[in-house]
Image (cartoon, rainbow, N blue to C red):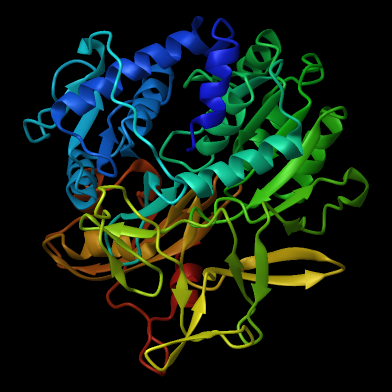
Length: 509
């Protein structure tokens, strides 16, 4: 199962430091003991293998113990973004079919009674051992959905484990490494921190939440902690290079940096590469559904300010295919997610629903399937061709000189500060506000965050933009809040009757 490498480290080096947060450290043996106690508490609540359990904790030692406890109990975890409005958190718990919510202290006012488990109140105990197979679900990560609601991406033990092992081998992680962690646990970057890092016996150091806003203090912290590696987003690394005082804080222990989640502007990457000449840099690429499907070890000699960087080579034994007609990237391989989780059931990417659990109670992973892709061998299902195990990413790419290059999204999806944002979800929330007649959301380029949502809308005279912002603040997380709002008498349309998104974007810029 996914925790097997971590459990080996606990058995061999129980006194080694595993996690560090605000000066508080916890050793491998202690981390396992606390996770065991919480897992036993879940079993006493009646949580069965394969059932979803939500985590109502910010990233850190307590949240890591809770995640590991869920896996030790044979369940799958659903990490929550505590910055989300209560209505969104309640929706995620309801949609996932969560049977328990792990947290600290009193029950949140918005949460239904009977689900809460205070992890600090769990007495020392050992859970009943659960045998977990690679095709059992480990996590459900909720992202913005094109249907107007958040959508859960279901990840198996095998998929997360395959990525973690590949990344560990690529970076030659070892027990002496000290890795920084800034990714929230509902973000797929966290799977590297939790499973690649702790699976090799290294120590994971949680970046204090205020430091990303103060890059000079952040670089000092990286130096003082002796950080040897970090997986984060380009916008934060750009800020570090620009304002981090790296000329006087050389970070001599930092042997690698990985970035993912958004495009890294080449001039900013060149600045970072020049200020950290001894640090290996890696571009990781892939949606949550594939984790990482491409990677590029940054070649400093090839960086040019007027050219983007490649997404590189297939990662983690993934196979890549470019659709002949659309240029869309299709992926299959061991790191692929199992499908989408909705209404307490797993739905494969061909729209078929699967039972949430098997007869033994373990959540199962069905194969991918997708109709309509030319040029790939097929099987037959009820007389129709099925393209098995391939996932269409929605990304436009090309292949040149053996390397893949990213050219943007084929659809409307935005990347805001590393988060995936579907305009349709914002539009659904706006259209539900009384007095709104029509709206459209487009992406506005932002050098610090990749993109920001921009909103154009038509509304009744008695409604104001302030009313719209106030309503959205109760429904959507901060990164989905429109950065600009434009009131129009009517939305512009193309001659074919479709919205003119290019015109809307031009009006908002």
